[in-house]
Image (cartoon, rainbow, N blue to C red):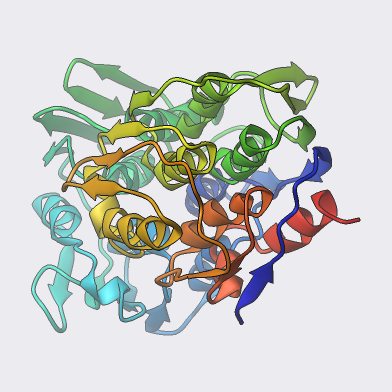
Length: 403
């Protein structure tokens, strides 16, 4: 379904309840398999979380997680320790193009039984669950944090716990800290000193109710709406003042665009007042790459230049996000260059109207470009792709832009 967005040149005011964080939800769903007395509240309703739940409940040998990248990584580790179970883990055409070799190699070094069914290093994979007694593994710290979190999530179930040693510089640190933070909340001992993370073997935990914080990646689109509006007052519900999510850095970054964030109980309030003469933005997003698309579109909509770095993981997401951004922003009139690790946008003075934005099967492409309705009219291809992380997105946007 394509969706046409009419130009809406008015202030943005309202209150939105965003679904629980996809990242926290999927981590807790894995941990719940090991600790049955863990209850989860405000579980996210994203496609990814639903595919995770279906996969964990499935008794079938074939588990298809479609386009859910987090589920692919976390389940690869989980099924490796599901003793006596044989599982074929597969996904969409794009998922079969996304590498998993580094995680598989790490699991094999612990003793896991995993083999490739089509192309070496890529799904689908066959996993025979078994008891893993080895407790030390070395992994490149610059790889996707999902590989690292996948290992940390099964660590408490290993009879000797886990010592994870990083080689090279560690990136996406907030996502690793999120995983360790959730382990700590459940009472599972862990530590991170220099390049070594240790997690203690844990057979049981006290009864626990874990409340999933709403998703900060999803909040980024409202930050963009606020920035692109002359004035705005938007309340977003179910957010913690001390968030485990790396994308909470939005609050600091969007001050550059005149957006103020205030925490009130379990909510955040975004306020924008008219600002002029904004300066170019230069920011390293190695710890929050999922908000790169939103920030790039915000800068283009405001007509300011930006240099975004630390984006090396974007090339193996749902699409090559850097090339996708270059393609669609260029159609809108941007002058933009990308490398394998960075994006460079020049200041612009015009925005083309009625442009069809391709989403490349990527939910964040659809949502990142939507706030441009405050500057022009545009059309979003395959708008339903947002269900991957935020099924209610278009309903909530309509609520803020309704006459």
